[in-house]
Length: 83
Image 1: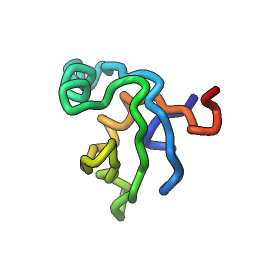
Image 2: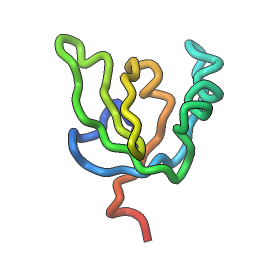
Image 3: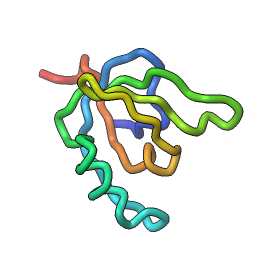
């Protein structure tokens, strides 16, 4: 498993877990409310430059811009890893 911030652009992933962090204690709740739930498909559409922050991601038909700190709360696994 990897973190969303390390994802390859255009590849489909599944959300494995959403965690909170010391820097963002409400991150898990906020992301869950937006639909970032384990099992959901997610695709990284692009990183903005410089600094690759924010990340543009798609879940279903919704597109979101996430800060790197938020993306660090999301564990993903490639679609090909699913059985």
